[in-house]
Image (cartoon, rainbow, N blue to C red; front, side):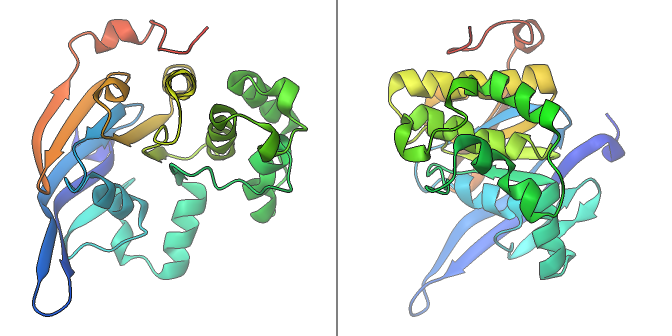
Length: 245
């Protein structure tokens, strides 16, 4: 594949944190990889492996000590703060372990909120199709406090998907969920990738969660240990993920 075809190009990323005194922590040590459009990648590793730091650098919420991150050919860390904010709002969707929903807004209102804040008008047809995909049509007027953890996380995912970002970054999105809700959320991510063509980077320490992805990047001590494409990834495009119906 050509260099220009890559949606994301991470090149020689290093991140050093200066602690108290002269202590330095090398969170990332020369990480390089590329992401093609439509890929579903699980970035896996134990706590402290550097996976979440890597995700934050791709999202533009942290700055590398050296190296570059390019999205659609643009070096995001050369952007001004306003440019980074625009990038996160329109090109990079982020899902965290905590759902970050507004407790006084309904499911539907939470989903369309970023569109309204960007002074755009939500497409009613797209909202309906998304609520169907999320299996939340019968919960559209419920408040977050009236939902299960899985329903809250699906609402958070819907809020990102409605904006059609170039890439969806998910940082331990099932960390607060039980096994049933974990399967539902992973199933939704797989459907978003398969049916909507959404590019996804999923950070997880859970090996079983990582299996839903077609490619697995394993990290340890700030380095990539392995970068594995599943042999059955093409057939899996037509298979059901855990939690799908």
